[in-house]
Image (cartoon, one colour):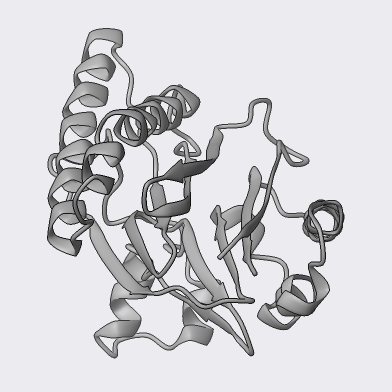
Length: 255
């Protein structure tokens, strides 16, 4: 299996800094080509969110260089990825909290990280950045760790009510601003001729799943130039509709 990769980020129309961070790596291993992608959304309203997002991305990239080759020399197990990635975010939570205390500030970040191998994907999620699989439909792979998502799950709020609730942006946890972090992990089989997308919440508030699918369906993404162009069109559409946040998207097309 091969991959096409695209990554784009935009400061948006309101904020002075882009607190989103992302990284995508194409990795040649003894088990074939792999993709590691990570996207972090530094907390809006908290100081130095970009420091938090960059710190977490750097820690995961170190894992790619140091630990992934070791796993590839034997076998990659779900339980091993879970343990190693949980340890990364737990450690980074303490590091970022300590930095904030020294500086007298609060800072934090969401994180969605994804490893795509020749046959399996592995995802870690904290917060409300998302991972999707786009095939014959658009399917959200992660679950938002937000107040309104929890209320919907408990049957105390409808999705329609959540869209207008004043607490819709309240996170249940994030790396650096939570006492402890409990990441969600998701695993699955990689599809050929599919698209895997990571995005910050700024990408999805003002556009619909149908609009995303139309631009990002596998048949529409024939090369990286088209991937970049279609992404930029959707970013501009978000901005035209007055999205106020930073906007970031990573696309991986399998073929």
